[in-house]
Structure formats: C-alpha cells, structure tokens
Image (cartoon, rainbow, N blue to C red):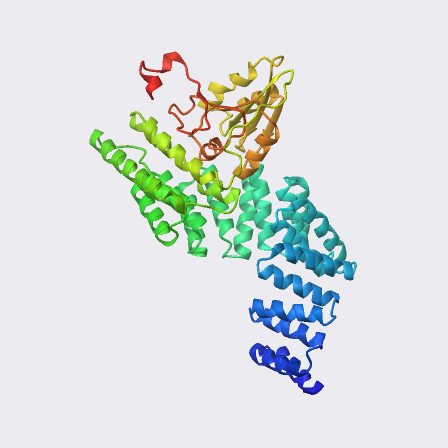
Length: 508
C-alpha cells in the first residue's frame, strides 16, 4: 500500500471519519507493520473512537516499532488512564515529561493522575512544573488549587483559584472558592461564589448542594428546598443530590415523604447504605399518640432486621465512600422514651461491619502509646459553641488539670463562639476541622496518638456516629450530651451523672 494511501487515511481522520480512518490505517499497516507513525495514528483514532483495548494494542505496537517520542508516550499515558490503569498512566506521563523537558501536557496529566492516586503532595509539585511550562493554562492552575485545598492549605488554594479565574471563568473555580468561604463561615461570600458557579454551569450539582447547605446555615427552609430540588433537576441520577433532598424533607418534619424519597433511590441503587438507612429508619420529630410511637418503633425494628439480613451488599472500595455512606444517626429514637439498648447495639454492629473492610485495622484494639508525663485525652465534638452541649461539656476541658492531662480538641463546626474560644484556650491542641471529610478527621485523631478519646454528644450529629465505630484511641468514651447508649462496640464507657438517671439505667 502506498504512502498516498496513508495520506488518504490521515485525511479521513482529519474529517472525523474515525471508522473509515481506522480501516485505512489497518490496510496500510497490514503491508507496513514496522511503520511506527501509522501505529501511532491508528491508536489515536481508536482512542478518539472509544476503542480503548484496540488503542492500547496499537500504541504498544508503535512503541515496539521504535517510536519512543514524547507524543506517543503521552498518548500511551492517556489511553492507560482511560483504561483505569492509573499506575501505568503515571509511568507513561513521567516518561513523556522526561523525554521532552518543559512540555506541559504530560506534566498536567500526570498531576491529575497523581491526585486520583491520592499522592497529593507529589501531584502539587508536578502541577507547579506544569504551571511554569504553561502559565496561562487555567485547568492546570485549577488542579493546583485543588491539590492545595486537599492538603488543607486554604490561603494558597484561595489565591490559586482566584488566579484561575483571571485566566478563564471556570465554574469549578467559583465553586471551590465558595467551599473555602464556607469552611471559614463567610456565608455571603460563599453564596456569591456558588451562585456564580451555577450561572457559569447550570448543571453543576455540587454547587446547588452547597447552596442548600448555606441556606441551612441561614435557617432558610425555602432556600434549602429550592437549592436541593435544583441539584436533583441538574442531575436526576445523582445519588448525593437525591439523598440531600430526602434528608431535607426529614429535617422539616416530612418523615413519610423522606422515606418515600429514600426508597426511590434505593430501588435504583440497592447497594446504597445511606438510602437504605433512610428508607427504613427515618423517624418523625413529633408523634400523634402513644400508639403512633409503637407503630413507628415496630417499623423501625422491622427495617433494622431487613438491613441486618442484607448487610453484605453494603461494601465500598474506599474509606471515604464507606464512612460517607454510614452518615446517619438515630437521633429521634431517644425521643420515644423507651429502652433502646438492643436496637442501638444491633445498629452499631451493622455500622461497624460496613466500615471494617474499608478501614483495615481501624476497628481493632489499639495499643497504648509509650508512657508520657501527661495523659493525652481527645474531645471530638460538633457542638462546642454557645449551646447546651458547649455549656455542659466545656468544663471537661477548661477544668482538666493541665499538669496531669493534655487536652486535644477536634471541633467540626465552622461556628466560633465564646464557649469555643474558652475551649480552644484551655486545650493543649485545638484542631478546627469544619467541613472536612470524615476520613480526614479520623486521620487527625489517629495521628495524635491519644490515650483516650471522648465524644461528649455522640448521636446528635451524623458525623460523630460513624467516627465512633472506628477504634481511634485505646479508650473511647461517650458523654450524656445525647442521653442514650450508642450501641457501638468501640465505645467503652458512657459517662453520666446520678441525678439524671433512673434506678434501672445500667440495663439501658
């Protein structure tokens, strides 16, 4: 087959006639199997056509025929990434970058792959090099900012996102600036950036969800309803959006509506624990009669039995996904005024069973740290501000003898109040972690090597309960902020006071 035939294949390729181009490249290669350039072109066309396995074979043939040039190495990385082989993609992108120093595309793509591999520190350095090579590439700067955000370097991330917007008005840059302002409780600025994000990209579901959360802070139920509904309309297949809308319905007292919404999600995604929990364990805030309490309790018990019988379907590949799926608390169960020990214990076993495979070793007994001069006690709370919990439990820290104890505090709310400042001043270490993912909070606690960990109000907020299912300290304690047993096997003690408890309380 002549060179003219290869030119014809290239022309078909240029016109976007991918099947015809691939056939023409194949005919040429049947007679010229050593033409590495033709293998490269066929791999490119196959990649563009979504024929990933064929593209991988073709690019491998190009390399085997002697084409180790940077464009072919880059193409091999792109195909490997799209095939899901991130480790191989990282290697190919690194080889492409080495073969042509200062070339931006392999650096930019490698940085993104390293982010996906969880190697955020390395990704940041590679993305910095990509930014130096292509200083006007907005997506490189946006990814650099994402890496800084993931590393909790908020000031640097904010500057990087702002620089991104000077290059291109990316909706995701507006959205991530909104996230940073939200983490700092700068609600008006967060609203401004989130609205800018959805104006740029009306399909950006996460921005609508953030707007819903911001309206929650403003106690604006109609704003919440509108934002969560827009999130579902933007992406009707988004489980996160639909779960958020169902959770909203429960929060405004529509328990039956919430259960129905959760059931619809579960019908399409049977492996979704959060929807499964909502479908059967959602409880009302107010009951019509004592008989109504009994009816809801019976449905709760039957629903829990169904979850236990099908627990094996709730398995998740990453710690973040597992703990996010377990984002639930049976808060209103205590309002029924019954003995909840059996129900909570069964629920606690269910949640621990879901988390154990994803958190290797973090549900097992933890050895004590080497002996120190002071006992290191951690306090994890979402409510160390001017509220009942803050006023009950701040003294557990402010009056703790600093000669005998080191107090480490993990505060997950963005609201800072007088009680918060008093707690922070009394603590040896105060970690303010608003809006952080559950697994990040767990990592902070674990890295501090506590002797004991206290949850003053476990069960009042959905974040504390799945954390309590992990073994993050040798001794773990629940306080009476939510006056009912957690049921979690990892909680060793429940601290209460005699005046609050009836005579049969140990049985509960």
